Image 1 (tube, one colour):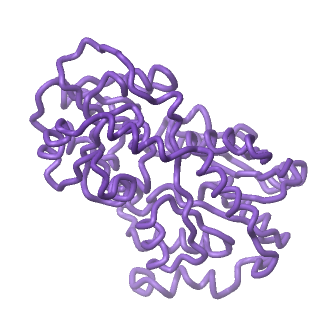
Image 2: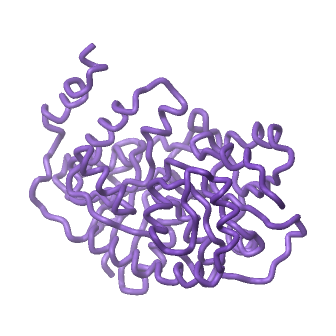
Image 3: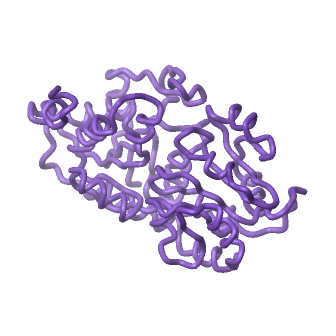
Length: 357
């Protein structure tokens, strides 16, 4: 079988879109003769990420990274995250002249600026440096791809996502909550903008599924909302099916895999008209995108669940996996430098007025 090695700093037991995307895509790829294995934090000691104690970052070292790559003998290497593992795999590939691809999953500039005084421009610069030698920078949506190109990223290609319709589909489930049930699923963290949802004056129940550093504070501030914590598999699918509207208040997600899961379960979407929901839904009659999230939630109640299910059926993990594999294997042996050039290193201190000062 053709073998692709994916390096990722995000892995089980984390529950997020990156982990679900990688595992579902790898399972689908087996169906057409491609084996995708993972180089993950499970091979190293880890430590809790500052401000996100439930996220564990690896403490990798070059010799073990080299040994794991050489033992895998992959036909292609993909770096999924820009963390410690991603950095050392990038370094190994550069040192040995190996082509590799990368993907852009997370809008770190906005996340970092929400937690610290670091300017977004500095983080964009670091990300551009990280992805510069990639043979293909995979972006989930056309709008994100266009933005990355605008920001100076090279070799940007599209890699969309899928949904498991065998797991996520309408079914008769009653959570015994006042209806309608307005559901939000995802990490409970400041960058997810959950307060924009929880502040709304909505009938029925506001239901939050997920865990994260902001959960305790939000539970105290919004006692009328129901917080269920993290849920997975059939339990998560049941919660989707028992709800009426999916509310996606985030303005920073690059895709929002939960949008497809909700639509497959028959839930219309209420969201802001931003990258992510705008690219997933577009002009399809399966959601309401508005700067007035309250109105979007109420108007979404008029959308037929059958339209949502039909829309999601066109997004399969098999199609997503084929695109990923094509990008990961269609690499060139040229333009792979043995190390970062002086010009690349100088980018950090010449492009931004903050550094010049």
